[in-house]
Amino acid sequence: MADQKRSGTSAVKRQSAAGACVLGALLLLGALLGPLWWQIAPRAEGAALGGGEVFTGTTEAVFAGEGYFVLITGLAGLVTGYTAYMAQFPLARRRFQDLRMACLVAGCLGSLGGALLTWRTGVALDGPAHAAVAAAERGATVQTGLQLDATAFLLVWPLLFVLQYGLLDAISFVRRDQPGVPDPVPGPGMTEPEPEPESEPEPETEPEAGPGPEPGADPRGTGPRPGQAPPARPVPAEDRARPKDPPR
Image 1: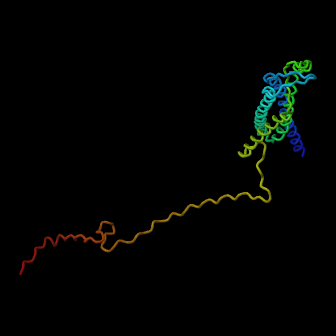
Image 2: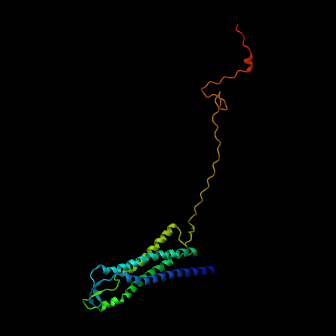
Image 3: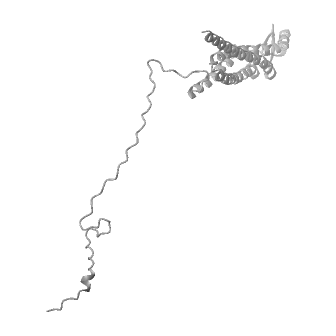
């Protein structure tokens, strides 16, 4: 009883440790992607309206910043979903413990937190541009700072993480090599398949005897065939030596 309780406690600790590692790694990655978004995203120019408002119109640069955010977080979701599943795979097989759910929940939370950190870090790094817009006079041409108006884009990272993670798990399920999952035990209503009976060797049969030789045929197979005249019988030596009777 004590051994079972101890093993259950160690299993929970391992699941918690695996989930904490996945969560921490995703949050750290999100903080690192913020400067990348700030560095490569273009900025739009517009006319200041006063009070921190800018009129930019509908140029391509207006939506490019959010497009780069979706691209960066989408790639991060695919890569982290693949990495998280492949990292827990050998650990679960080595310990024979299912770590999929712990890593999945931690990955969802970490992906959402990573997207938030990417957004807030990029906006914070562009603070001087936001300050310049707020201080600009009405009608002045200014360059806008990074912003994310469509906050629904924050769900791109966790959504693609779950899709990639679930795809790999489905492949593992089809191949029947899910780590840490015991083989199904047949229940009371299930019966194990009966082994196929071994086939018995067939007894050897002697060849059937054919019809006997026909009359007048040599049993050794050297006699005449049907329809042929029998060979002439040899004349004994006594008859050949005896002289023939003269004709009367």
